[in-house]
Length: 227
Image 1 (spheres, rainbow, N blue to C red):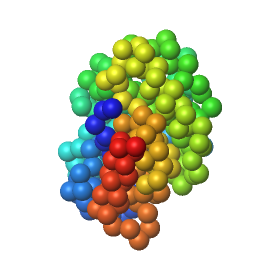
Image 2: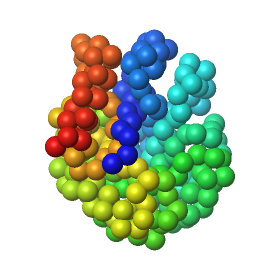
Image 3: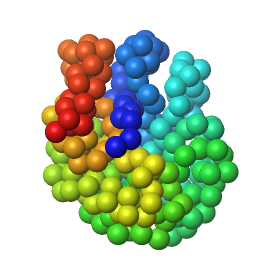
Image 4: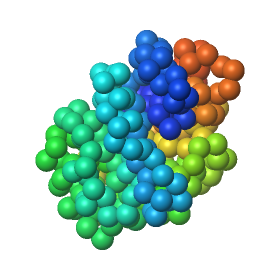
């Protein structure tokens, strides 16, 4: 089991308090910042624009954990300030030219991750297991925060972990994205997840201090390791 990492989702932050919240997350031990990029086509939502991303870069030294929910990501990756040390996830459903997207990410020095929608089977990864650094498993339908967990996602995490291990890729991470509540994070860790996209069901719960949310989330992740 790899070291657990928490990646708080910027789209769940209060944009009027963005600088303060990023600083609070850094002080609370956040490992990455989850950056959702949406085009209104692959998912019915729009997020994030370049000016906001530049402001976030200036406010934080944390690596970006990019999640591109866009059609044909290989055509837009060069628009963004992807840096060495970042992680970039692109959906296997979003392009017929997945290798081209992956090669572009690798050339930028970022870690290559492939994302799977809830109805996409783990077998979709079989042709690229040797080419990726990780897998992002959607445990809700992509595009919006605050959705209910799709329980089949937990089984998929375990299936993906088994496939990676069988291919000799024990160092490849699995990232869980969608309703990562305290209780669900525990179950996700037990299933084999290594990275956790924190949103409104945990770290950004209304009326809940960020530091308390981060601490509680880590505690529940550790519980999943001990079971």
